[in-house]
Length: 300
Image 1 (cartoon, one colour):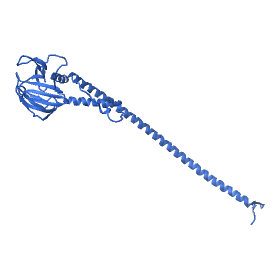
Image 2 (tube, helix red, strand yellow; image 1 turned 90 degrees about the vertical axis):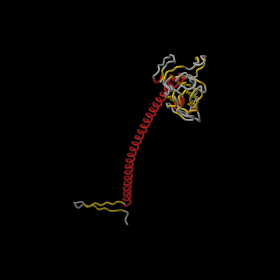
Image 3 (cartoon, one colour; image 1 turned 45 degrees about the horizontal axis):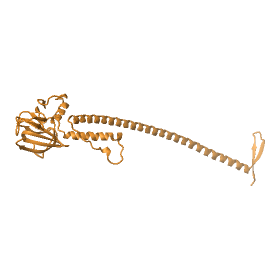
Image 4 (cartoon, helix red, strand yellow; image 1 turned 60 degrees about the vertical axis):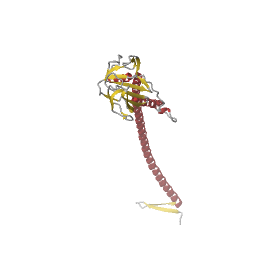
């Protein structure tokens, strides 16, 4: 086999030309051609992959931008919600402060001083509350006040005319100076008497001095006593609610006429009921805030 390839070319005019090429050169040229094809294919594939990667990169950037925007919106909503909660808390605290001040004014008016214990925000392990526990402390304080007010006998148990105030007076029987430990309220025999606060009847009895009488324990140190009743409508051990009818006004026992002798006891000591009657009357507008003589005043 020859090492060359011979080529003869004839033109249209009959001339002939011949040339020869070594087989090795042809193989080299073929190899170069194949290599060029491979390189072109690889380059094309790389170009296609580059375009694909660019498209994916653009999509990822778009998704990342969308995630960032969504995150920004979530933070904005969270901030708005936190601000709304803060405003709600501030409003609630302001309302609690007003109620606390109103209750304190009532306690001051009746000259009652109550001790507020530690609230929940002052007990237990590490805790950081809103406003350093101010809201919790204020809530505890108001709840304690409200619980105390539930036990406080406010208002008058029976409508009528005040005929004898609390304190020193001339005894109507002996005409000697004496201590009057309650408030006398005159009205017709049979007028219904209502409980000024919820509590439990501890005594429903009769003796020649008190006549028919009742004692109610309201809790938190408060108790009330009702003397000279026509009759009692409740029994010892019975629980009564604020405003419930408990007795009828009478003229029994050591009495000069139909009236209710009404006593308020706080921690076992008799205190002036008029302060409690007056506070309730001022609150509902039936009595002016100005002073004046107790005797002869109408209460309802």
